[in-house]
Length: 210
Image (cartoon, rainbow, N blue to C red; front, side, top):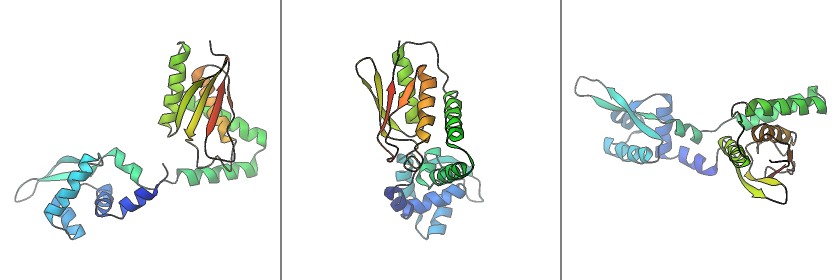
């Protein structure tokens, strides 16, 4: 997931500092207050907001000499607030492949990867509608955003957010990865008509739906 300006602002705020501390390990209110130089009540107020937003959860208690203290920890959703190197690493990987492989070999690699991804969402002999819905759900699960359009004898998957947006402008061959993945899930030929110079919009043409 790419970090947004809102995420950057969040991480520099008091709640963001709390999240950073909890990312390392679970803490009690008293421990967090001591680390940030705030009162216990101020910490509780911030934790209430973080719990409401689904970023922090209570995780048991820590026994002490006085009385048990509630431990707070991050939820899995909170990880999305932190920078990820996926886009940068993938871009450099594709650059390296370009230096060492032919265009045909890279295309084969993209399509093979697309098939492997599709295998995580196996298809079944269903009517066209469920298969198309599964394809849209898969793009959504990968971080994209797409809608289905029906034309004359064809279907069109029109994307508004590409799950591989970080690398498409420099490496349009990754569109073949997605078209192959969709073809495997839907069970028929899918042709990508994306603009390889831009991260969006995506466009996949589907022929031969029974």
